[in-house]
Amino acid sequence: MPIALLSVYDKTGIVEFADGLHRLGWTIVSSGGTARAIGEAGVPATDLADLTGVPAILDHRVVTLHPKVHGGLLADPTKPSHQADLAEYGIQPIDLVVVNLYPFASDPSIELIDIGGPAMVRAAAKNHAHVAVVVDPADYGPVLDEIRSGGSVSAPTRRRLARDAFVAIAAYDAQIANWFDASGDELGDGGGDVLPPALQLSLTRRQVLRYGENPHQQGARYVADGARSWWDDAVQHGGKELSYLNLYDTEAAWRLVHRFDDPACVIVKHANPCGVAVAGDAATAYVRANACDPVSAFGGIVAVNREVTAELAEALAPVFTEVVVAPSYTADALDVFARKGNLRVLSGPRPYGSALDLRSIDGGLLVQQVDTVDLDRSHWQVVTRTEPTSQQFDDLAFAWTVCAAVSSNAIVYAKDRQAFGIGAGQQNRLDSARIAAERSAGRAHGGVCASDAFFPFRDGLDAAAAAGIRAVVQPGGSVRDTEVIAAADEHGIAMVFTGERHFRH
Image (tube, rainbow, N blue to C red):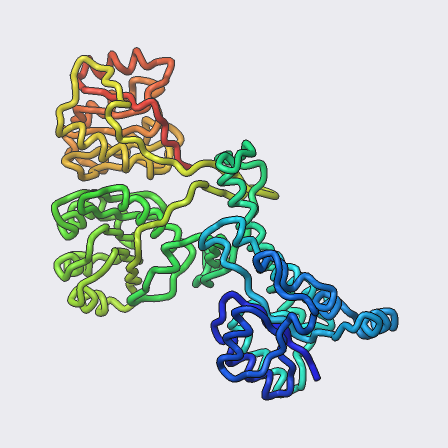
């Protein structure tokens, strides 16, 4: 009679699975909460202590760590020496083990580091030629179906289950190692570095995308095991399947719009904002954001940080848009969007955030802290004879926030917390300033300018002055700062140094 050992933390479906095995003539061995759940359902089960002769000890730290468990999992029945050892020590082969682990990431602590579970999973996965190991309740049905139809779990399925088991163990160990890295100072071992000496990366594919950056490329979304992603909680209310660039650009828009506390709208095209505005309500914010650069907004991503009303939906509907993302929508707004069959309409929580930014390079990754924007004006230094007004300070903070999300070299012209000209991704700062001036078309006259890095020459400042800019925010730090400050004083422009650069590539 085949033996199945069941020991799970997540008991979803375990009773039905055990009952199915029992009806197929299997012997069920279990312990603790799993045994209680099975027993209360009327499914016969042998207590693990009866198999090993040893009860759970050391506050349940030692339950399955016993030769009669691991011998039963690791035995190769085709080897006479293994058969002899089994007979000498009274060990019964175990044909199937079902294990899922303590949810370490839910409340990381020493006591949630599972020992017996991973040991059994590794043993069974190693010996998958003879033992089936199940770590995911989603596999209960397919495994039962195979046993019903063929009398056992097939070799290809055992191999696939073993692969999944090692992935689960790797992910579990990565969560623990990362916890040690993150809590090193608390543990008193000198760790806790922002950039630890090693990164344990374990990711699971959550979403197959329509395609990658281009239709001939495959694309998918992966999530770090144990991490939260707002994408997993997002709901798509309509529209086509999402592609790689839909997610990439939507992520950029969603992150930026949540840097504003007041109602705001961000429009992104090719990872760069082409329209940003803050207003008294989301509908007005959208109209103002779209006015920044309507040509670039065509086919863009629209993100707002307030519920979308029918008024906003009606304003957006005539403009070709790839994705709209917001915290929620009124029923009337969804009705408006339903008439645009290809528009992807998403709702979701604000980004949960990450401490690190990773980019691939040959054979590995570049890793850095995620960039943050410091708007504490006590850290800013007015370096010109002219001081910004209170209104200008508000606009400078707005433009500085937007500028940090624009590809370098970045120049942003804004007024009344509305972007009017965004120069992005140019090889020199002067070209970015000229693009920003051209796109603002005089609308930023009397407004402000933000530059993500220092002006290396006064020409960028002169270009801002020619566009009617009256206040500038920039990091400072150029060997020609004195020359640039003199130019600002010459034009009567107020200028603030933040001491913080925001390159973005």
